[in-house]
Amino acid sequence: MESKQLYTEDPNNDVDAVKKIVEEVTGVNLLEKSRRRFVVEARAIYSTLLRDAGYSFPFIADTLGKDHTTIIHYMKLADDLKNTDRQMKRKLYRCRELFISEKQPVILSNITDYEDELEKLKMRIELMNDELYQLKNSDSIRLSKIIKIIKENTPRGHELIVERKIRQLFDE
Image 1 (spheres, rainbow, N blue to C red):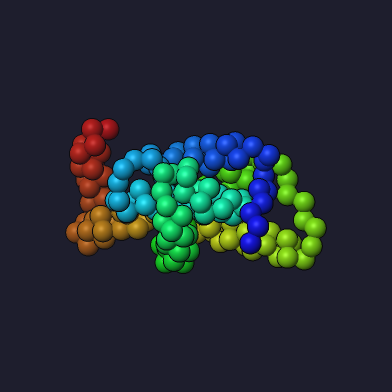
Image 2: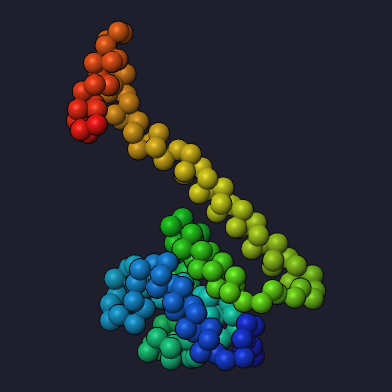
């Protein structure tokens, strides 16, 4: 399969842009000598983005100081994790979104291009719905045990006393 670059004429522009984006989103130095999971996941995201942009396994490997087989492993890892790990999926799609937003609009020339773009948009909507759900429920989930304790242990008519004690606790 011939490798083609989809975004820029200068490969270093894409490499630098993807590296910067992935490091910002994940908080990881991609060139760090480490096998810790979060570092490997960041490299998997980086490799996936460059591969999707049309770069070869050996080229991507050279940018990380790795072997091309390691990049193949990263690609499989990213594919597996995005189906099972929501956090990884969010990071991957956030990085992809940031990378693509820096580029010129994609010209869709055939049905496959439209189908790919539609899948990307569906995934983006799914991720945004997940984030919205989490935002709506994060406080109630986070505080549900505290609310339950207060409900169970506060006699009717003593709500103001409990409120005052909570405010004292937080020095309001």
